[in-house]
Image (cartoon, rainbow, N blue to C red; front, top):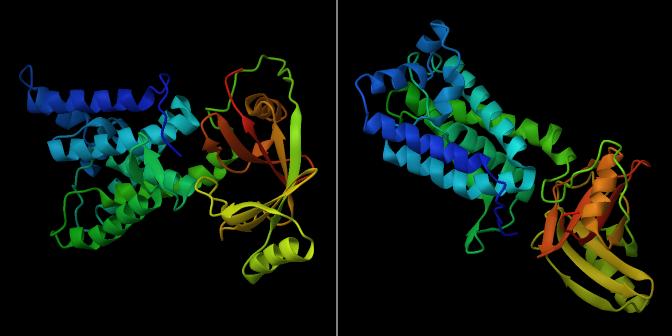
Length: 350
């Protein structure tokens, strides 16, 4: 999947702009008292909370004092942050950014006395960025994501590294030999990312497939081009079924391999039939809820319209959209019969 930033993706650019602006004000104060004002209102700590300055739990998310801290936050936001915003939309991203950062700041304030740093300050965007990394890792798992169509990254590795450093950094900080990073804030934001993904994001339509519907939620015209079956097999069953369908039933293999996009599947083999495609899939170890039984795969002529129709009927989507190639995508949904189906096809704005 390649990150394709839209002109309507405004949250990350705005956050970066605020971060840079506050960094400039701190290091190049335009008037006396600027640094004192920023330290008072854009830094979170137990002392600030005791003084009822609760707004610092949020304002601190946009404040950076040194260039390295600012660079790390900016790099993470313009890479993984933009990728996530492009999937979920600016409103959803902003909601998650603020929520994960708020919980992270609160967690830092509660944990700091435990690690013998009761007056430790917290500021910067790295806490909500950790939450963003966790959500991206849950969406893409161990798949390679092509950032700007040039740079290969694996969000799961980045999230794992972040968490390992934080879990190691907390006991070191208690000995006053660790870095002044808010490890507790990072862990709190990561937990928010874990819950937020499973409770909210994975059941919603992703923005680059969502279209505007009127108040009556009218349905759009959609035509089914073809249908086929995805048959889940695990372990040795997968190889045995490939041989059985190919050699015993004489079905012709169209294509097989490991998907680069759909992280719900580890490997697949497609057989062409006169009436559609039969696809053997080996689900990854996390996708048992999607592939408990053979799954109907539907190809439509307008996936955007189909998704808008499903959304109008409050159908739940059980995984994020997967882009197979430019202008083509697939998504999984749970139908009224309680079963999971796959639907795919070309998408565009209605």
